[in-house]
Length: 154
Image (cartoon, rainbow, N blue to C red):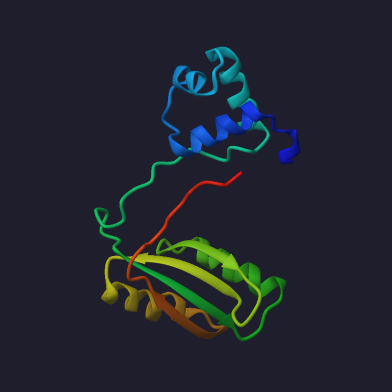
């Protein structure tokens, strides 16, 4: 799909990734166009699905979610029904902020945020531990975030 984008579209997307709060006028200045075509391009990029949504990135520490853990989950058995059931359960679990179905030695990689180790223990025991088809869990505790990016590189 990227072949449908011209240089102005790409510059517009790069600029929005850095700061989605810019006004249409500010975006127009950044890509050297007038506001009307920039507004139309932005709406087209939204309609075509290049721009999925606009979000505010919050500080987890200030929000009381300072502990980040990557949790590798292996299921005893996997098929469409079990995978769908696991996905539905995880989607209802607020501590899990990202979930990926993976290949290799585990089936899912969860990115989990909790207040502290005690809350993570409760999450493991009361939420993941309740999943009948669970074979194993391996937790990787993040000591420091070295790089964090929300954008796509072009």
